[in-house]
Amino acid sequence: MKKIFLLLAAMILAIGSSASVQVKSQRAIKNHRPLSHNEKIARGNSLNMITTQPEGELIVYKRSGQTLDGNGGYVTPTTQSGECNIVYAPDGVTIYMQDPISGYKTGAWVEGTIDSNTITVPLGQELEYDSYYDAYVVLTFGTTYYYYDNGSQYIEIDDTGYEVATFTIDGNTISLNGSAGDVYAYGDDAYIATGLAGKWNDINSWSGDLDMHTVLTEVQSQPDDPDPVDVPTVISETPEGTLLTYYRSGGYIYHKFLETGITEFEDVMNVVFAEGVKVYIQNPITTLTNGNWVEGTYNEGTGIISIPTGQCVSWMANYGYGGLLVWGHTWFEQIGWDYDYDEPVYWLYGAYDPDVTEIRYKVEGNTITLLDGQGDVWAPYPEWGNTTGPCLIYTDNHEWANVLQFSTVAVLNEDGPIIPANPTADEWYDCGNDWATSKFYFTLPTTDIEGNPIDPTKLSYSIFLDDDQIFTFDYWDYDYDIEDDMTEIPYSIYADGYDITDHVVYFYGTNYSEWPIFNWRIGIQVYYTDHGVKTASDIVYLEVFPNPSTAVSEVSVNKSVANVRYYNMAGQEMAQPQGMVIKVTTYTDGTTSSAKVVK
Image (tube, rainbow, N blue to C red):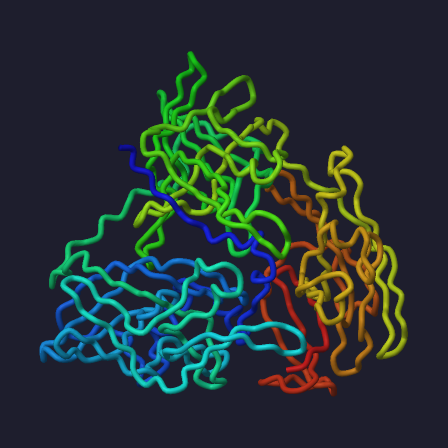
């Protein structure tokens, strides 16, 4: 029988009101994992946290069960995966369990005891430390419930009355006791669950992870002196041969947190035609940007490139897993009906086909086209979910890694990247006070450096101040235009902006006496991004206030700093700058620049 591994992706796209349930503790948004806090824990932030493997016999268990995952700020019901390590101490009574909750793969251990066939683990043990909040996630056991605040619905946990968690040993399996709930129940009922969870110790709030119906099944015994892990070969260096750069376009299907869809893409694909029949392709999947290569053969007579499947294209040594390039397919299946919206509910499945041993491309003239891929960006939902093509699976469990590319057409780039012409810095309007807005007027280029027209929708720009400091557009000042702090403004924002437009930018507080935005000049640099290739113009400056330097050109030139000195407002040099000072920078070409700064 053909062996196909399925990834059941918990798609929330059409689950109605339940998709909007949030975790009360917004720290769950910041602490999206897996394995994001290993380094913090390794530093030993807590005297009580067990960060090194205790002495004793280590046994590895495979996880199964259900879980609620709230690490993106919204609750997602899904299934447990991965492994759990348990150390049995020499005294025959003490045990240590690593990462007792599937969502907290931080490497921390919790201590418990074993009596006959029961394991007892005291709650309150620390699993994670966050230096930003100076707070810990601790182990708890409880039941989730709904919480309403200003009309919004949140999830919180009640752990009243629980002091320990217990597990039952049955042969080579260990099962969590007392859990209840079903993540596959429809709608809000899926979020009422009882199980092992995490909680922030300082605000007594659920951290966003809860496991229920946990079963740990022994898979192997770790020897005292284990053999080195076999690390797959990854081609990270550019192979020798003729390197050609192609503009690549096509479509792919993806699944990530609370979002599933098909989209079109444009990027760059590098191909090396080596001596003989060898050929190499860099980043064979469009979303893969690590620069690694896969090896294949090129038959010049048929024009066919053949890439063997199973090649490792990424490896994360810290986590012990990576991604393999294979051939697979995705599809949607109806699993229920949303009576609130009167529409079906679909789940996304992904699988790889181990019988397909090579991925084929056809070379014709200056194009390379993926063969056998299927899918249609414009097909109606859910038919567009029926796609076939190259994809990635994880090395440890062979589950689909959430991306499948079903079409590729690569056209040889014979002209080189497009470099935009320089913009012009036209005018500065000073509002003259601390509370109104000043304005910087500029003109964006309409051609490249060769005078050829360019697509303005591919432009973006940054603003620079004084000594080439890049300006950050703060969300709190520019909330009509942006949703997060930004240093680069794309065309899609400034074309219809409020304070940010295609020819003028408004600035707030430019004349604050103690915190001026700049002291000397303001500049603009334009970027042009085409098929994933980003190029830039020069930084073009406009001197707004008297120039403190006598030899600085209008267009910034890359220079090295020779030394920096600080002077107080009376002109006296200071060994240690403090308060409002004048910073004088001397460059290796003999020029200098100065600016008022606060230290």
